[in-house]
Length: 130
Image 1: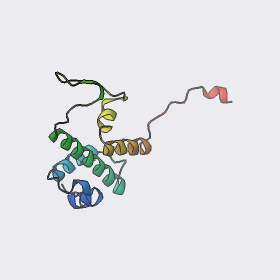
Image 2: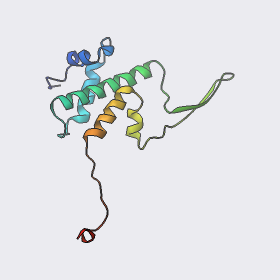
Image 3: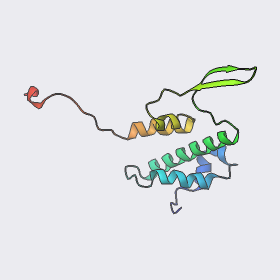
Image 4: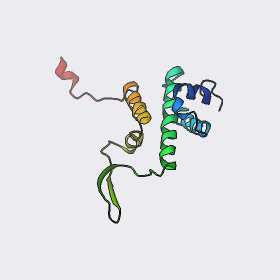
């Protein structure tokens, strides 16, 4: 990875809760790949987005390592004969659902929604304005 501002030491400085994780470099390189081609973010914005995604990926990996591989909202549970059922969370798409599985992903999604402008169609005819 040839990004001088995107290294494990700086990441740990901002997210010290992951200081003991040995997969930081791997997840950091994966996060860089998500934003590598996007030119709408640069400098500190891009660094923070990459770090948030890295923290999200590390958090998801920790959950998997701890045996928490289920997603969705728990609908029911029973104790005898152990039965759990989950309902998928009500999100607009799978990307939103995936990011909402950690506080880091939620912050990343909020930041993206705030910074990225999506095209909006305003109805009406120009003739009516005159």
